[in-house]
Figure 1 (cartoon, one colour):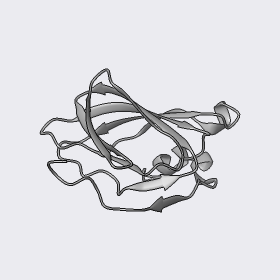
Figure 2 (cartoon, one colour; figure 1 turned 180 degrees about the horizontal axis):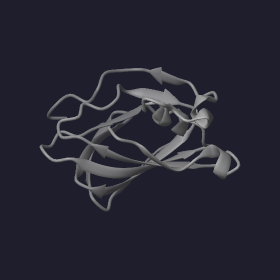
Figure 3 (cartoon, rainbow, N blue to C red; figure 1 turned 120 degrees about the horizontal axis):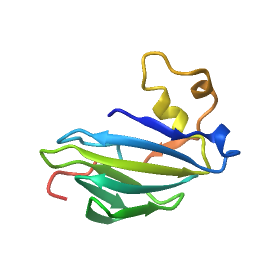
Figure 4 (cartoon, rainbow, N blue to C red; figure 1 turned 90 degrees about the horizontal axis):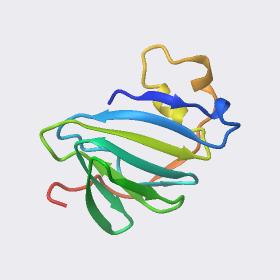
Length: 127
């Protein structure tokens, strides 16, 4: 993963953040999880598998996916090609987690981030 922060909490009064990602081929993604913020994905290139609650769906470039706060969700790239997407987070704050993935995170990324609760496994291959 190579996150690129497009919009930070401090730039939107805490309302929203946006992060661009490229998911590598055959990326297992995060474990099924919940949190107290909404997330929305817009796929720019490729294909991703999403789990929202008990539903597993495949989305492609041009598709939009929304996970309301409190709903268990995850995503994965089960293809042999990378997938590029923009993640929108509201309220903002969790973009700091992604900014911390670098060797030298910026000062703003060291502020607190919202809690995330793991509630299940990654998406199994084949859905």
